[in-house]
Length: 314
Image (cartoon, helix red, strand yellow):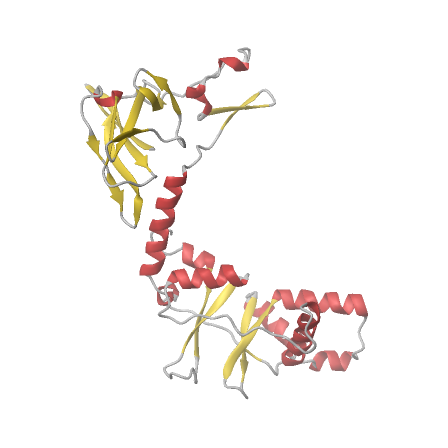
């Protein structure tokens, strides 16, 4: 349950409580001491989550008991705090009577003094009082996930494009040594790779590649001369890396996965999914007016931080 405190001069403060029932049903009501057990308050299903019912209702601060009427049967939510009462097993909630009241505990008091009303507000570790973060219920998590999913589905990768800027791409025939100098000079951690022969983007060169190169040279020594190191191309390194990947995966030949990318009209949920599912830090946003994907245009590099900067996240 969520609460928002409202108070004004001469008017008793109230709390707007969000009561939640996450277990489904056709008709759901809530009733409790907050309305003297005198009126059934109807609850409505959350949009997109038909099994979760909610209602926002004003209550006065203090200790309250409540119960749900689901399809004509009295119920209580085992995932919320509950206790026995004259009305059977009921859910219960407690909020301080005084506005902005912060409960305190004398360190000399025994731990048994801390009743359930304080447990969600105050914690004790090694004799030290610490403020703890209230945990979210499963129903709240489902509602939050739904709202985030709706937002991500309603917006596209095109909205991640900055109003102005540049995107650096490297040719696969560029020497690795020169490529990393370019990354350093441009102040970027990675760059998409362009293969002129194939007429498409084929991968990404990142700082991780540089680390892997140093590790391989350190583990096995270098059979390349200094001149050969200066001319060793990105494509040659990627081919060697693909061979190593094939050995790790038990394949006989080289193995390299296709470039992970999105289009400008893919929704943000697709962007996030490709980043997380493939374990990458960024995905290029590539546009092609041709159905076969020819003549691709590199528009931007999408990241999770870029998605989080979109409203209402940013």
